Image (cartoon, rainbow, N blue to C red; front, side, top):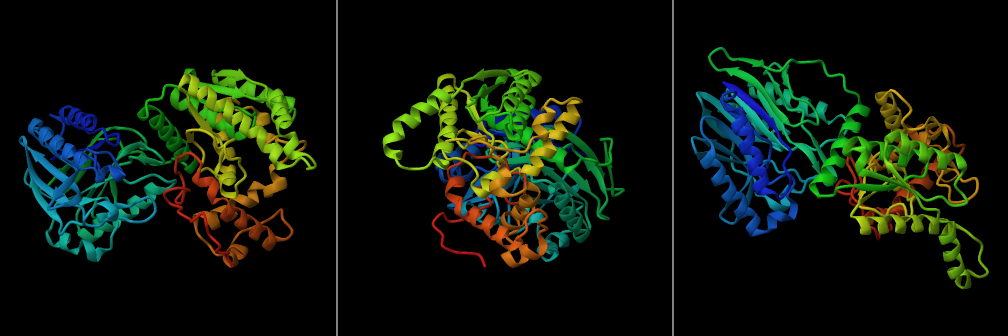
Length: 545
């Protein structure tokens, strides 16, 4: 049997569009494949979240499935949809053959951790399904069903499947493909059958689905690999008589690095957020710093230079070097640059506030005025021309609250919200290497990072060196390690009082939740990102010890 794994990029809620996408792929696979497999909830898009609470949405999805089934002949198909039985919803897989629905399977294991909330919506299915498709016994699983221990899979093993398929919508974080392969290898060995894993592709709000579908033999060897971050159909063959597997794709040893993965995820997540929300162009503030330079480079790559507008808004505190870097970056990327000096606006604000600020010393209030002026200007351009404003804050800043509400956090999409500062630099170097030239100016990469809101300001003055900060944030934010463990496990090289520094940073992280709640969504690239993964109360008096 010739089997196709269809890595498609559906849009949540676009049931008609998704059905057409599925049918087009089915028709294209005719003559090439006997069976085509689609990802989890491919008909509705994943995750549909509270759309599942709308009865009309559920009915539209069921109607679309029936119409789709009536159009399918000459090939069998497995696809994901939402089923409704006796007042309960199920994350389901449908087997379509000869213009009708031949079978339906309900997902049993419902993930309810991290980014997943499936228990909020779905009921668990009662049992595994084994379908005889063109003489081959095919065991059906959906995503989390496979991420279970061997005891859970025992009933499926007793059914003696020739092949097990997994319809999946497994979101990306760097290195996630290794976890999927490990899980599938364990399942293939436990079941004594090959596992075909079909994963979703595309960006959906904060999530990116990276594809990378594959097939694992019962001995744990991978014999088929689909690309990461790309849609399309890849094929393999299964012989029931000889119990053999083969791939029509030329298999290459995977050499992709974590930085390449993150780069691919950011491009796909940004491109899909812009296109699926029907924006034409994006705008962002260009400060001459590394964060805005990286976001601009990613946007130009993902959307095309003609769809990116940089806005530089210098004040007295911006050095000639950073202003030059912003201009050089725009020229290197081929993007439009708008220059709006803010000194007069800054003076006007200070004049208006002078009676209220009388007798006080200039401090962070005046610094943040500049950021808020810039945010207001960007949003005015957005309102006038319909541009989506991209914010440029990174995870190191978002973690510690080193950002200004209604200033540098003002915008519609936070591209590098889940990217630590040290990774920002690595990505910038990677993009320059890939381009074969210093598209992001060398001086931007070498200059000590600064917000340039006062004279001689440096990020290190407030946060310490990023080489010290970022490992600490990984330990506390991403791994939830207690203070005592952080003091033992995290290397702090440039701070004399390690314990005091750790307590300071942890306190900043905990106090900044109110800022993060008001920030725009951003692309998840780590195992624990702010937002879906990190749900801390704003009003919170717990102090870590």
